[in-house]
Length: 208
Image (cartoon, rainbow, N blue to C red; front, side):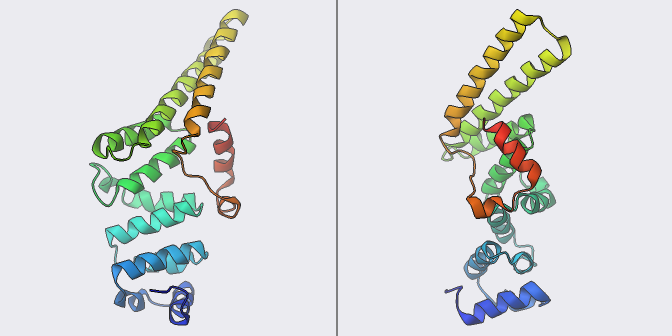
């Protein structure tokens, strides 16, 4: 199928405006899956959402994947929360969506929750080797959080503070090495424009 054809472009424009999704139901799953990806990458989000109006699980997962890949992280999270109860226990077609949710939680500094998802993925999907790096990143971030809170709560003396800061720097160095594995989704300049501002700030902090 060529999504660039005039007929399909006309369909997407119609759906993006006020068209009914019933018109899209004539297409196969594979055609609609491609149309969803094309719609999201073109910024036609209403059309993409209407293409999964029948709540097909696989198409919903494709919508979430497409939104996240293009930097629409808030919309992706909103759709994930609607099916959160179906993510555990992990089963097709939800593994990739679970990974995405783990990344979203990680970028919100909810490292324990993210670690739980990544650990479940590592156990149920051993072929997703990169997930083990995600688990390691979460564990390092949790250690950094605990050490930072310790300094904030107990106000250690100068020597103790220097020791803690040395540990933190060591964990940050390990995080930098793990980051080179590209376990986390990255976005190009166009896609980054769709990221919410708070996520941009967290990305800089969590990847440092």
